[in-house]
Amino acid sequence: MAMIVKRGQVPKVPHTEFYAKPGVLALEEIHGTYGFSGAYSRKMHVRRYPTEQVKPPKPAGFNLSCSEPTGLPLQPFHLRTARFPYGGDVLRARKPLVFGATTVVSVARPDKSTPQGEFFRNGEFHELFFVQEGEGALSSEYGELPFKALDYIVVPKGTTCQLKLFTKKAYFLIIESVFPIQFAPHFINPQGQATLMAPIVETEVGLPRLGEPRDEKGQYSVFVKHDGGKLTRLSMGHHPFDLVGWEGSLYPFTFASSDHHSISREIHTAPPVRQTFQAGSAPHSGFSICTFRAQVEGWHPLDIPAPYAHYNVDSDEVMFFSNTSYGARKGYVEPGSMTFHPSSLPHSPHGDAAERSKAARGKVSDYLAVMLDTFFEPLHITKAGLSCADKEYPLSWHKASLGAGLSPAA
Ligand SMILES: [Fe+2]
Image (cartoon, rainbow, N blue to C red; front, side):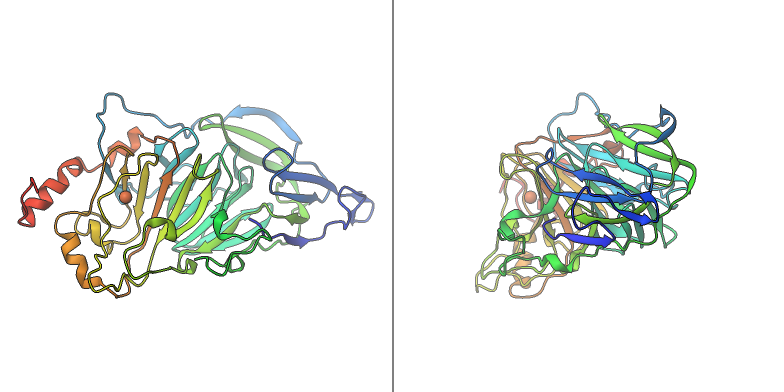
């Protein structure tokens, strides 16, 4: 995140003597990326370093490893993720469904807040949440960050946090990347602002509000995810949210999907115009995240608003359908459906969707979907993903053609 934010108190000159409490030297910590050269924040702890463990680290007793089924042929997938039951806090409810070397895509359907005295830190991946249902707040050392349905939440790798629910249950799509997740860099000018042609405005983000430091002793368990989904439990003797201030460009923030301001043109436009976020160095690594939301469909008198059949041989594509209005998959997806199209498989609108889409010409669409396209990274389905897969999906285009009265050979 290019915007530098300051909360609470920090010394004007970095790494110099600073006292938030009389006679107590505040201790500085750098939370950084790309060695000491990327985005970072400096954090001032009221009195103790975050290195003070009071018991030996232990395995958490559960993990978030990605377990892959064997012997599956190449195929497209339709995962009905809304069919997982609600249950547990956001950490224990998390189900990795699709993964690659630098990417993990999960859903979580929690019905509890993070237990008191417990915290989570993703030590191996940056995270992007899409809130399909629910309302709450991400509490972290950076402060309290409220979120609501249809928001994105960006959480930098290494952030220590708790997730509080204000609703009885919630439903999250969670995308993880080994690389920082940020607004698409080609929409950002060298000074760090979104350009005036971009679909996003960086100042529309929601930022954490920092309260008083939790200068408290006690028993605090921090579950750290590391090394391929392992979880280690650290036992801290002081509350992790003990900052008197922080300053920098690495912090959690929210971005409402409705604040992705769509760009339209006279004829159908390829997905990159819908890009909101990016991880890695496009087009060589990482992924792009596109927000498919309300926009004016092409108004050319002969425009076909439905997409073309396509396959991008350098990208595996995952698409999460927040609602069912996306015409190309109408009748096949349900809220929370996730399609996964491996790079080498062309995919097209179903049945007569292209023909039907002509009625949308020049009108404002109301679909909402989140799409992830990797760059040169094959993805794999997990056993959990397969457990909610629609087994008919590979033949669904054929069946749609029959149902639409088209020749299956056409
Ligand atoms: Fe696609």
